[in-house]
Length: 348
Image (cartoon, rainbow, N blue to C red):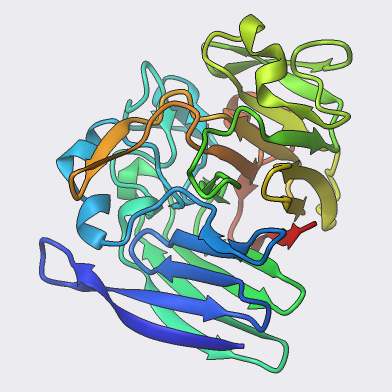
């Protein structure tokens, strides 16, 4: 196993973003930049040993900060915070104080606001251990950044081992009551981008979901049994697509409220034989099949577009601050936010 550090590009303020290339002994390579904590590449072999990039991303920093990309921003591979997913109407009340957040997704607040953790330059320390290589990212989010209360110290550790496991470990501490919901927004395409994801098969360790109205939970949790949302056994995304005009963008309830690292689901694609198993300590997982991913022209070539990747975002439920019965996202002084997600890559 090895890790290499290189220059990824320069931001408009002159600061430099780095790229960390993690490689294990099985030809699995993961590339991560400290700009936005973004996973830019996961190069994994197929059943014949041919390695390809199986996440949506770019080779250059400039593409991540271009107006074209940010104009219909899909958050490729990014580390999302301070609060992943939506807060209804941007209205946040904590301990009797009201905070009005940026409205950046219809009438709601999404993924930490206009400049979330996905667009910050993180401090980075690469490491090599006996059983893993990785990078530790850290960021200080000051009180009232994007109007969230509290000075928040955040860490995210990405590590790769020879079991083909990419682990993402999040931690955070605050000096006053705030809300935290961190996730990673990688989009997977196990064909290496040669086809869309509609023939991919998914199985989820979940038989319930939060009912949504215009992407905000009503507070109800319902069974997915015998509905188009049922992934209790493997099925393709296209199987029930005729009932879902914009595909899936839904929060599944994993029933993991004790925060143990548990199996959450498996994504696979038959032609390549590639498979990803997801485990997490988080109570929910957002399935998003990427209907709104823009088509972009990169170096003269048209890329991406609807259904070019699928996101499996482990998380606390959307709009949790407005739902007392949902697992809490409140973080108090003296407490530590602590979550972990593991993606295990294989080919059969």
